Length: 529
Image (cartoon, rainbow, N blue to C red; front, side, top):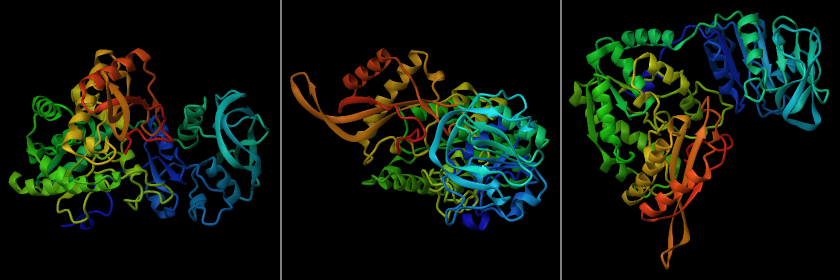
């Protein structure tokens, strides 16, 4: 049985109703819009701007949000409104490009501004609007646009302007609304209030979606989908796979066998630690498979990060399909794919927006072979990372799992640039262990969202004693984030960084220089590859 015979995208719970739907026009913030709406307790899904209106209506939404995007409404090939969308009779909120598209489609006029309006700007209110209830005039919003609305459509009013006098908020007072700024980003002081006004007041959403309701619905779906058949689940030791396993275990109990694959790409002592935690706390059958030779052979000579991910994905599935017959001939393969994984691998699934650029292939999304026999189960692929953690806590998982920093499925292979060798892996393991150990010792681990060491393929001149060296450069990376779609680099003290650097250079042979990555996301991703 091939994956395409089973499901063209992901085999995951079917949510009958998304109270709000966000249409993605290619903005880097599209997923963040959905995340902010979910923070209000409103279940929200992202759909491509090219979706047919019948697909959108099938979700039974109470409202639609049109995201921003990089295009002008006058560009050849720029995505328009799905035909019939404005005839659904439900509220529509356009953000940035979405506002321009809404105005343009309803008879307004959009033009290029003399200069781009970018960054923080004051929003000056003009009259009362239910969209802006509780918002004070002169509040700060985040602008990012060149085109702007110069004439509103018939029946619309201007409810706010920027400090430069440009139209910032428009609406017909009932169904259709547009804002020229980004309410989803933290820089917009009143963004949460605006989205709440739209979702709860204008659309009438209940605001009662929670991790608990997700667990109940997903467990019911898993029981129905699996029946009396058997499941194997990939355990990596991280929160995503741990929560996925716990959900399947709650649904079908002894029909699940978890498989922990030692792929030779793990951190120092990780295999032993993970087996101990899972056997003590999850009360489920866990089988350990040593496949390090297989993975290292598959990666021999490979330097391209996308090819690394693809080969690792294929190797994982080959291992699981080899193991499955020894575990009672399982029919399903469960994994911890999350919503950001799916979106960042856009292009690997026709379900997601063609406007979204593929950032990187996640080994559990685009790296899986089309000929795999096992049927995929992706119970978490509607959830953001912090939602997965909430579900984990509700399921009673221990802190060692729930609060653990994310670790990529491809492991250290994508935390080193260039070729993967045993020698380089050992060097990176030791350096990474020093960094994480010092974070814990300084009480910084739980205050940092993710921290990692990257072994670069660069070498630089150094001095050791009286001798010249020419050895590897190691990069340290640590970020703070709330939503995992944007992140800022962690501000550690110089003394802390000096301690880590000194230990690594002194204790890890082959590394002569340590640097600290101070790039936010975007433009960079958290991982280097």
